[in-house]
Length: 292
Image 1 (cartoon, rainbow, N blue to C red):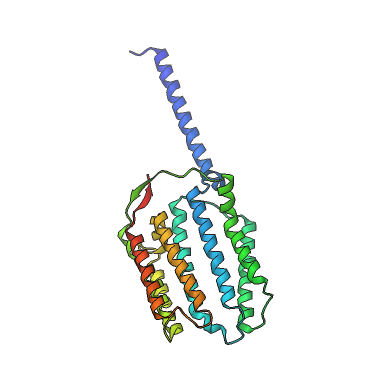
Image 2 (tube, rainbow, N blue to C red):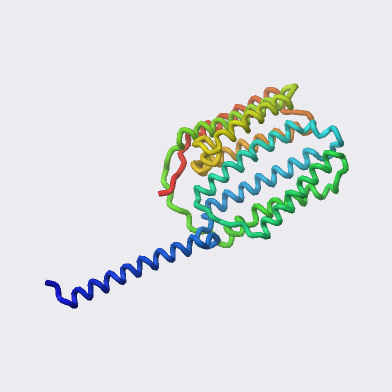
């Protein structure tokens, strides 16, 4: 039979273990309740957000300059260019939702940041309306607004990268994209390629409008499925994002050529479209990574 002292020691040991377990659980709970500290973004996520900030700054810059100098009734000539800019940005928004979940980020935006975003969006819409009605606005707005976009989107991840305000990158292991993610990756390339080719056709605006409508409808139907952009963004790794940014750069470059109703021409548009499809097909079959 066990002595009274031995039983007392076992009870004391069990009590210490229970206390340690409770302390660990409380610490974890506290960590989860402090998103800014306990679940600060990894360096990979901060770098991705910085790249997205650059893309969005380029989008706003090209959009403003695309509409610059047009009077009432003339803005419609830039419709193909604006669609070549808008479609990659819509894809970017959906994919970034999945990227946030991939990196386990739970960061709440400060009220000041949200307020600045509201002010900026209101101002951006106002500028678009002024351009459409022909009222105009000072040319320096075309420089100030993109700078504001970069500061709103890029200042935080840039500060985190430079100051070390990120957590250590998690351990990742190689994996293959899921079949639905592969399909959507290729479809993104096909849609961008179709837009590039359509921009060189005579009735570009009508054709591009149809392509954008069908793509947007498919995107909304598939949003919550494995084919949806958030799910694809969850699966994408560095290689896939690199390919997509490259394809987006081609679309942005094409938009510059159609601002004044011009285009790259049929041969160049087909060549650019073929490159975009090839890049996204390669991206679909490149290995990705998953957390260990």
